[in-house]
Length: 363
Image 1 (tube, helix red, strand yellow):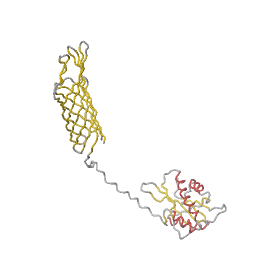
Image 2 (cartoon, one colour):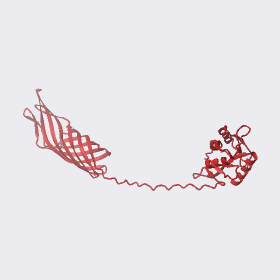
Image 3 (spheres, one colour):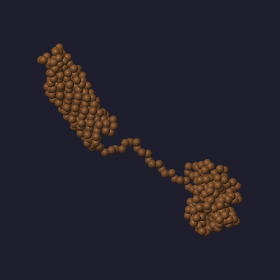
């Protein structure tokens, strides 16, 4: 609001002036000139309702003195209302607050706070405050037919009727909420059934740790999980890379596929789980032999057995786990492969394998 401390606006009586409208006189307080932006904004806002003019200067060390001088001026010029602005207090964040106080010529009426603004120091402060004052005056003038009614309208629309404005008590800042504990809340033990889809691979060797083969694994299972234990039952399928063997009388290609059922049990400790698995497997071995003279023959042999071993899990996401396992495979009987009676290889009863896979659960 520039360098001025306060201004006063006086509104003439409800009787119309020469221009057919009530008049508004803007008075400076304590010798500080009225900002032109405030006066021009008032004129614009009250163009159709009242005339706005500047008036003489008044002074006073107290609110009562200003009210008395304003009322004397109202009587002298035949006006009905006066409004002035004062910098009275600071709010709870330290910004300066300007209030606008209104008083009518009615000696029984009290001063009324009609507007309030927290200053920013910018040129728009005067325009914003003038807009608030003009809007209230416009509303009051539109319905009041006498000075008594005008005083009542201002009292009903104003912020606070009071002859002397006391400093407002500071706002009480609510106590901050107690700090939240960082400890995780105990949760009820989950008991969930879920469908499981597993895909992965591994490495398989025979009992002499030779003839390595890469495996591809796929499994579908139904799983039950509680807070401490998990159990799964499903079907598994495994594909192994083919083996190519050579002998004096020809060559042999072995392709092996496994299908079976799997039972798994685990103990859960947070994101980790440890347990064991037991699989019953049917191994389908397809053999294709080629003699040195180009003749070929093929056969499919089926072997049954089981696999057992430890396994571990690591939960990567709520529905995604990584599974690692070791397995000792045992076939009920050994299988021999030969070309025209000449042995090429034996498929022994024991194999060892290590696998790594991902398990996705579907609730």
